[in-house]
Amino acid sequence: MKHFTSVQDIGDLKQALEKAKQVKEHPFADQELGRNKTVMLIFFNSSLRTRLSTQKAGMNLGMNVMVLDINQGAWKLETERGVIMDGDKPEHILEAIPVMGSYCDIIGVRSFAQFENKADDYNEVILNQFIQYSGKPVFSMEAATRHPLQSFADLITIEEYKMRERPKVVLTWAPHPRALPQAVPNSFAEWMNAADFEFVITHPEGYELDEQFVGDAIVEYDKEKAYRDADFVYAKNWAAYRDPNYGRVLSTDRDWTVDAKKMALTNNAYFMHCLPVRRNMIVSDEVIESSRSIVIPEAANRVVSAQTVLKEILLTM
Ligand code: AN0
Ligand code: CP
Image 1 (cartoon, rainbow, N blue to C red):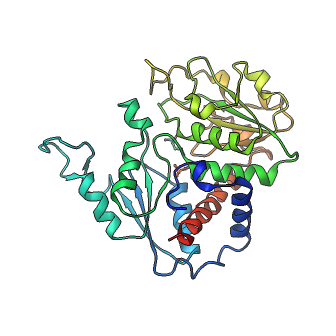
Image 2: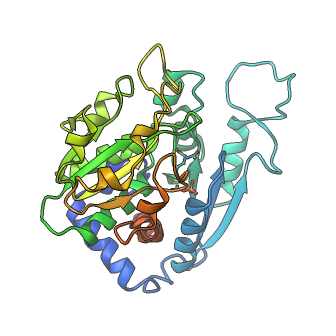
């Protein structure tokens, strides 16, 4: 694997899951593989899980790990070519990227959708500049349109907990006060479609996702109907995708909060969320604290997904 930005880069999913299982069972088996190799984690946005789990994954592989928060201590970066740089940004990303690439062997990038220009977001302008100009393998730690390390961890978790071969997985929109990217739901949909589960997406009118990610999923606007017989309920907020509302909050209707009443419609479903989660907006205290909530093992599997991906990149270097 050269770069890791979407489900397509991981290859056969069954094999990837088998590799992840090996990594989880023997986390220190590949300490030699990463020796004297440096992974650099670059954050344009906040993070708890991605930052720590990817560092841990690198350490488990014997790698050196460097972390840079662009907005805390680095120079503010200009990202557009051709601008006269007389404003508040002292450095251009076109120099910063190859410089950072010269200090490491693998680069991880977190760069959320900015909701300023839909085309820039959906063309992954920032992530692709890293791929083009760093000269190093690049992996996404949540870019504008996808969060593949999260989705891979989600898939690993579902495989661990599922009681039938083809479980019913429901992705439900849930309310949130601020505009959040579509990366997590886009990516989750992409991975669930690839895994060929019974996959249903439910959201209020106006929250339709990009069709390239929805794929063959069933979109059910009646949330009670969607919840029925679900084995997994995966909650996430996202801002509107469709024009003219791209990046806007259209609803904060708490009728969509995941609560015990809706969970009672399911096949005793497990509750999942990528975290961080706002309690009693996205999910009630009762549901997230229940024995069916698997958000902590889901987050723990972020080490496994990151380590599996880093290992695959190291193996092809
Ligand atoms: C981010 C998002 O919704 O994309 C990161 C989730 C992993 N969440 C927030 O900004 C709260
Ligand atoms: N789930 C996830 O990516 O969390 P962080 O934003 O804390 O990294």
